[in-house]
Amino acid sequence: MNPSDEPPALPASSPPEPVNPRELWLRRSDQVFVATVIVVAMGLMGLYWVRMKGWGQSPIEIDRLPARQYDYQLDINQAPWYEWTLLEGIGPKLAERIVAFRDEHGPFQTIEDVSRVPGIGPQKWEQIRPWLCISD
Image (tube, rainbow, N blue to C red):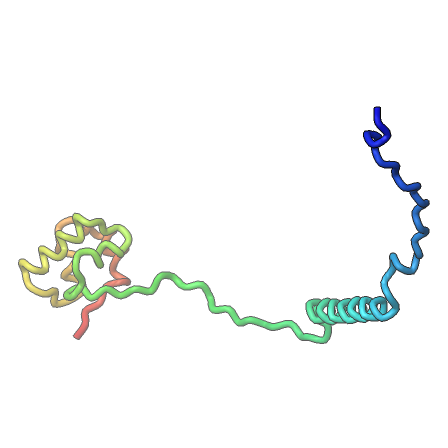
C-alpha cells in the first residue's frame, strides 16, 4: 500500500460550542409583542363572554298568536276538481263527480246545492260545509 492510498486524515473535531440560553428565547421586543397580543385577545374574549351572557339585557317577550285551523274557502262555482281534493274527505273521483254535476246542471245557486251531488251524504256535507263559499 502506498501512502497516497490512505484516506486523508480528519481534522481533530472540536467540542461543540456552548449555546447561549438567550439565543433560544425571544428577544425583549418580541416578548412584549406576544404579551400584548395575548392580553388583547383575553380582553376581547372577556367582552364576548359578557355580551353572550346577556348581562344588563332584559328578556324579550314574544306575543304568540293562538293556533289556527287551516282557513280555506273554496268557491263552489269556480273551483276545478283538484281544488276540491284539498277538502278533507273529498277524493279525486268525488271531486270529478262534483265538477261534472256542476257542468251538467249549471252553476250552484246556493251552497246547499252541493249536497245534491251523488256521493255527498249528510256526514260528508257537515264535514265540508265550513270551507265552501259562493263568490258574487
